[in-house]
Image 1 (cartoon, rainbow, N blue to C red):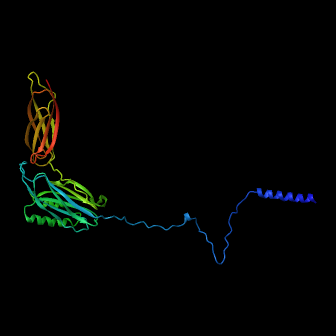
Image 2: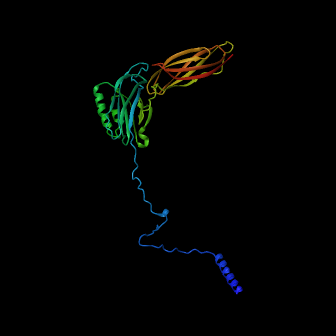
Image 3: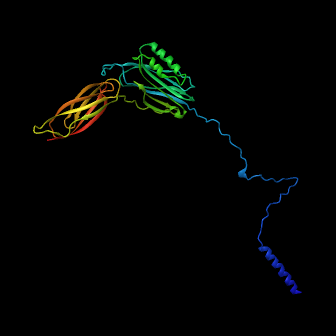
Length: 338
């Protein structure tokens, strides 16, 4: 009997061991969840990453910010006071300025800057705000014209023309310029900026056509400080200086040589220039005044006697004859031998 019981127990243990070692295969599908009348369990039809999220609607048109804009004229300069034939004359012109600023939205009347006597390469301080808008339009157009005042009718007709010019960006300042008598017209500046140009915000120095030059600022927010009053001078240069080197004094202990220097005038009218010659050995040794033609040059030839051996630096300096301001300088090294 005991043997029979042991056999049954051993058989059961063997069956348990076989079941424990058998490989597990999960079911191919899960049973549907149980539901009752009080609660219903639901599952999403797709994974969260695959669900249809709400779509954002992109803007149909790019929004452009229209900032406040100010325009300030800082300085006005003129190059030619119109006295042909005598570049050393101190003739003055009675210069008046008209400024029109237009942005396609703000109705701004032309600004007139009262006339003032100005001469060749003269700079006048203005520092006047000529335009402001709290929200600039689709562009910014600045037109400035300078003319010599002769009578009241000229001013009235120009103001009327500038009012028409300010009504559209396509208005041409050139048509106004061409209507002026030659002796009245001085020069103009005309430019337009768009949003891609940031409405021209920045500082503008020495801009203009013909005989006017303007310095102005276009700004938004805090006002930037203006530049110091600019020095406005004619574009005249020393093109070259020719002096032979080395120079031999020879048996007589002196030698006469020829100096040549050429001055070029890059302005389109005649200008008076003073020049001075200096030696590092003997000091100032010559000077003179010359009238340079417009867009032309002059060669000056002089002979000098050298008596001292050694190395000398010969310097030529030129000055604007009207006010004595320095324009250019050139130095040449010369070797003098026994």
